[in-house]
Length: 351
Ligand code: NAD
Ligand code: TYD
Image (cartoon, rainbow, N blue to C red; front, side, top):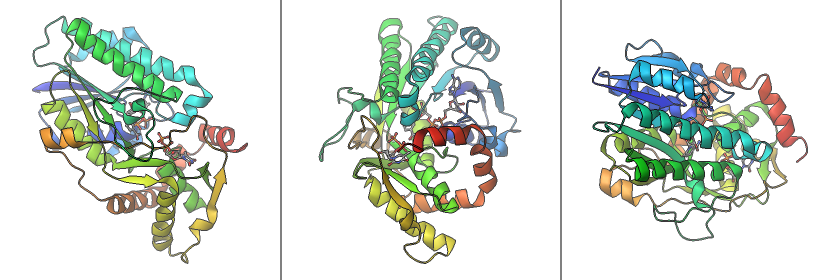
């Protein structure tokens, strides 16, 4: 094997697409998937590659420095692609400390493991930290987040990701750790846990449950198909400049209510429903506290420097996503049993 790469959070939504891409595209690399398998981690996401000769799974929690130490000693990784995180804003409002632990302390534990094991010999080494556009805060009706936009996080989730980004850059500036950071807009696609807007609403439409739109529904997000994010991560990991930051986005802004209506229309067609059937499920509910009004990414740096751009339109990506959920009802059933219902009741029963 020419390189060993540890991908953290590889059993989660985006991580599983990154693991699959690397395992299939780079048979000469050993890919080690480090994941604690929290509620969001699911090895079913990786069934198609779990027996690949260049793939290994390690059930490790980034909150356990000794376990990280052992993993680094065993595998001697050349690279780390760090995606493991608590990732849902609503859960961060219910339980902020979980986000401080995993996103901040877990990231610092991982930085320490890399720093200790690479021992100042950084030739051929890279620590890639995957982050979010939410660290930049909220935009008004115009403008975009660039790599120079000042951090202004508002939710416990985005505050914890902002803190982790600062630590990654501090390890570069202080210890010379070779790092690269990317900040991406909202992802959607197969294997997305049905607590986030798109998979939650697909699941609720299938089950004919209410579609809880927060506030006035005029909040705006920039949506990117998850496989396009994975392709950007591949490019940045291999060609990004040491110490640099890259914004990744879909050039694809949607107001929540417009997106939900598009989803309803597409699903009515696919389910053979009469037009308008799913829209009847739309229910306006109490707003999320501290809800960021608009996110929009200026992705021109990655486009100009690395030649990246999204490969599918939103309508194509959404259609592929709906098809995946309709073809994978068993996956959906597995992840929406047990604890999921406790969270669902806590989050939505009083809205
Ligand atoms: P996810 O919640 O689907 O997956 C997170 C994964 O991390 C899970 O497999 C989970 O088991 C694992 N994990 C959680 N805590 C852990 C711990 N303490 N130790 C080891 N593993 C742990 O998240 P996602 O949506 O795939 O996001 C992945 C990364 O991308 C996150 O860092 C997130 O901030 C970032 N990001 C996400 C989006 C998005 O739209 N989902 C957009 C931009 C950036
Ligand atoms: P989400 O998928 O949680 O991503 P993020 O908050 O990280 O952007 O939410 C996307 C948008 O959809 C956000 O404006 C909140 C809104 N939303 C709802 O209106 N209802 C819901 O039930 C959920 C989960 C989100």
